[in-house]
Picture 1: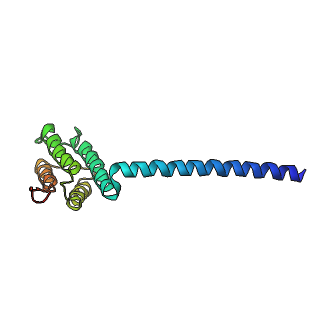
Picture 2 (picture 1 turned 45 degrees about the vertical axis):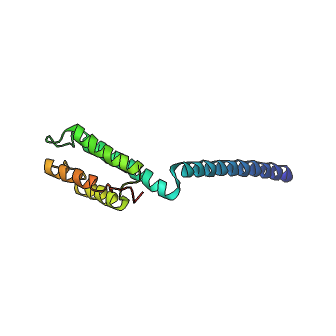
Picture 3 (picture 1 turned 135 degrees about the vertical axis):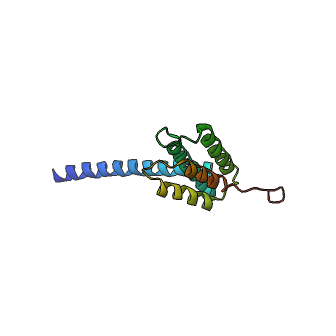
Length: 136
């Protein structure tokens, strides 16, 4: 009787471990493909910056957070320029992360004023690097 139970359990463990191995291998394969698609470590940093920028844009452009003196189009245009610079790898990532972090720390839970928002948008666009033909 104990021998029958032992055989059933060992078969169960074997099937479970095989299933677990297949799931882990599949997850690693999907992760590797996504990592390759975004461009490796450098591409992943730009991808994360783009998504963080999108979250800040949503927060700033919401009706309860956007100052009355700033048009929605102005915010959209500024963020679009930075987003295009990220896609073209023409942005200083360290400066961009600093500007976004400063915004989040300063305005967490409160609405920025019109001058504060204009200053943030100016700093945000200041992270774009101007590349000349010789630098490319």
